[in-house]
Image (cartoon, rainbow, N blue to C red):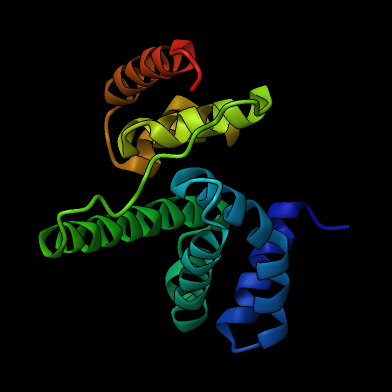
Length: 182
């Protein structure tokens, strides 16, 4: 039996030669984990948006398989591109919200109450309240279990920047979790 990295390389080579079944297999292998990543980055209540982000990334893979096949491992590339796609979607959402605020005196989004929910849900909501850059490092380090080096590479920042963001994000997460529940 081939090593996982070897079989992935074979699938990438087959995809490079236009074999649709290879794409389907790569999507099956990598899709669920990348949807979870996108959900964590965008917020757990935004499953459709997370799925859309991952579909956009896989559409790029299908349209340009040579770019990925030449780079080697697919997993790290997918993590980076999904993270960037989520950032793009967040920026678009913020632009739309700003536009709506200009058109209306009302706040377009009311904050939800999290009274009576379990600890996991409180943590999810707290992570969702973090700034995007803080949420990214928390998700990538604690939930995706990436190393500091891999996170630095994924986010295109220095190792020290990841350390600082992670420290700041943990501190802010603790503050949010210590706030009285509403």
